[in-house]
Image (cartoon, rainbow, N blue to C red):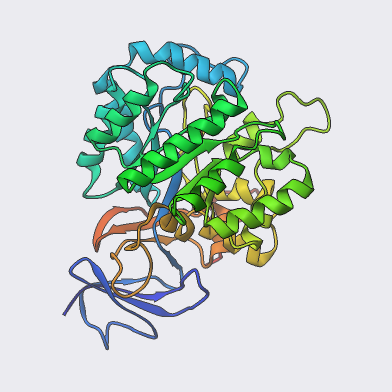
Length: 429
Ligand code: FE2
């Protein structure tokens, strides 16, 4: 007998009336028409035609800063640079306990939203490496229900900030997974390029992946992605390197981009755009027209470059909003990128599920036999409807275990001249 069967589910690939059989925490079978009569299980869940999705994955987050909004003061201008300055003011007052408490609270928010894997950058420029130790402990504690991947992120510049190179290497020794960087924040373009080379070499030596904040700027001449792409190829890091943000590509000359995107595809570089943050932090020096700032998502996808959407920030010095809802992130992404075609909207759904799973190297995430039995039942019938509604999460499973569940959202109307009625305002039942 199976442990669990989800029957009558719709899948993101368009299949309907699918049964997903689970045994020992793994997906055993995924088949159209598979129901409890043919596949008896101790627990049977009737999806009733609703969408069963792989878990949401956030490829770009800052868990050491999350839920710190207002500490020690609010970002009045709402700009990136005031956010960085504010984070610098907060850092000396951070305690390991407070960072852990906020991070653990966010991980609970994430589980409730079906967000079961997060790649978080952690600032390594603090000589105490306090946030590194805090997030390594959080990673250990949440491991049974949420996969955390840590990136050693030299927020103040690995060359610009004294001691940052040694601290980054110490963070890796303590167990941080991925090599980060911030080349556009170094003192010169040459220093930025040098930082990309040394960080990629370090990653290659240690068998680590790379994920850099790269060209988070409206400056069309901020071209560190050229170097990151070349280093990926030179060092044989294909598929293991991610350029996060790449907002300068929005403003680059079209001719340069036409060459660059082909080189990125050749080198197997991954991209993470952060639509909520890019649309609010970029274009701040513009009058009108104001640039959107997000990188060229549809063009990169058309060239075969994997593009994920990240949340980046939730209630921190850079962004006072957010809730851990990756459908909100994808909803913003598709608007900013004007990806409103049917196939494009499905790509935006993939940009917060299967694409970031690939970027993080989570081969066990997916709705295929042999994968971990981790999935989310949504109150929507297909990915486009899920995006439209930022659909309610009905059930969240990790390795066959129920992590969270909630009742379908419905509202009772009391309209003048009509009898009261209770209805779902989504697909009508
Ligand atoms: Fe970031």
